[in-house]
Length: 166
Image (cartoon, rainbow, N blue to C red; front, side, top):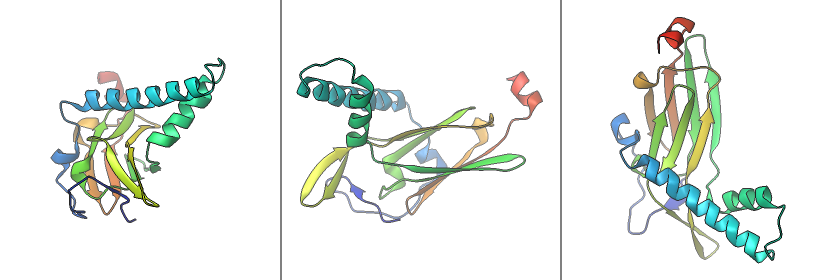
């Protein structure tokens, strides 16, 4: 998969970084809030453009998401003891992405607005995806890798005894 996103003044890179550089950092929740505020602001603009007519809030929100968020295609693979999530993330380098692995979900987020060039126009886009997991996983030992536009998270499933202990 060829990356379609690049930051101003940065070279494209196809290298992967160690897991520690991909995992969520201290400002992760601020970036999630920034993405949510971007979508909310665009949804409100759509509401105003329609003459402030009530009853279309979900339509406005979904349209705003489709305009702001880069689509991410996710596939979950479930094995007896493990769960693997693979996501196609059209970014040039691993340092543009953060991943938070939780017991019941995986959250993928960018580290700031991204520029997309298409048909002689440049727009700002964001990366955000929350993936609900079918079973709880041992999030602390999850392995996260990013290479050639594919993000992979592998985690051991928690047994029933592990879930009750937590």
